[in-house]
Length: 133
Image (cartoon, rainbow, N blue to C red; front, side, top):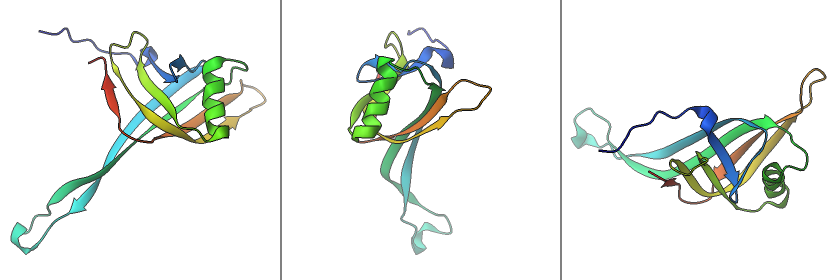
């Protein structure tokens, strides 16, 4: 029987091309699927659906760390419009998800009484795979 382990959000990092994004504070993985309505008169008053196309995305935020390799890879992927391999996983690789993504948005917040922060949205450019489980 496998050992069950609760995972703290603090332990999950975003990796771009195998390099952890430094300065990271938060990250969310979202998955969704289209619903194809196949209701007809024979479903006797109940709607009926099939699963259509699926999509997934990652939102993350953190501190801007100038010259940090992972942050630079994230920023450059946005500027260059390249598809990058992204991992949402534990450092040891024992649990997580991965796939090719595009960086669809980056926002920066420079408050006078706080550190420079960023937030970004990445969108899946293909399959999402589970790793380590």
